[in-house]
Length: 495
Image 1 (cartoon, rainbow, N blue to C red):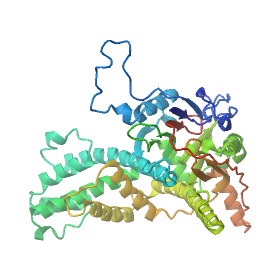
Image 2: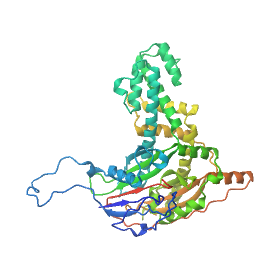
Image 3: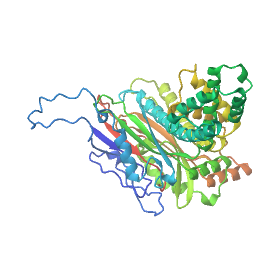
Image 4: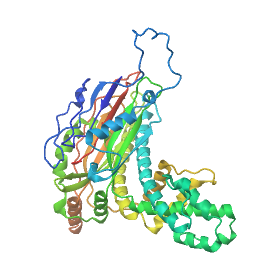
């Protein structure tokens, strides 16, 4: 078994992990970091070291070693090392979960994990890995919304309820429990009192006189969850992806693996989103594309480091900034089973998917910033709450469920006309551990690219196409057993 740990080169203060089992294709020279000190650093090389995880064995020298039978229960480490890997990833960077001055831009850091729902030996694994990454992001986004929504909800409840919140939910961190408690307490109030509450929540109180107690409770619940989530969405801006921690394979009871995503929310990133949406910002504050490419080019050429870059990452260097967006796709290419036209169709679909993903991340980053509290967003969110409620017995207000609701609303609202988004790179590579093929595109925006786009539009010139370098990874030999591995990829910038 082996552990593969891959981190980004974009931190001058982070040292690379030492390789014990070298992968020749990953022996990259240290890349210059985006750091205020300007010192060079490397955190990009993917390396492999002997696994230290797994089941422990008894000491043969012990007198009763052969007599002891193993526990019928599995240890957590036998199933997953993700917690340990995440902690190591954060400690290496001086980051902490939650708000912390040492986090990127001093923001609120959240980690979410999702299992990969396919075996590494199948072609479906690569697509399942991407889906798991998106699902983990939804969980993280849902946790951020839940945190704010619960705080908003407690403030609202104190205003609505004379006796305050019930003791059992005063310290709750769950929106579902809070909504249930508030709805149950208020449902038996007078119609006049309920009218006032529903109107303050922004709902329609005209139907109250015809409703029984259970129906009033359901209406209160829906409006309370909608209003608190809507207000929290207004604060959900400036969410960047700052790391990906993965584990796959091995001979344990669970070998499909998992993906953990590290996201950070910060007011500083919110401002970048506003500028992206509005085309604002002084061009002098922009990080030039050439400066970005100095550090990105070696990663594109290597290919493998790009496997861990996902979503939108704010990039800052010496006070200048920009936004990078990473789109990735997994073409289902199986040797000896496809005709040429099938291969071409699969490749074209994968390219389009990766481009759309990169565009979508930027649009969502911008949309979150300015669309959160639009009235149309609230109407659509109310529909989502009612859909997830279903028949009133099953509530899908987990972190992932809330994240999915917010994502659905944001998608319908994200008609952002982003000016100055450029494709600055493309790549392709097989996964060094499983052999699955991946390809991707990197897009970039800054106040400088926005200003250039505006100038071209005014001059009625067609925007020039961006060059993009590509690399092709060599095919990987088939293996009947996927070795256990993990990798973690960090972030760009001076974080």
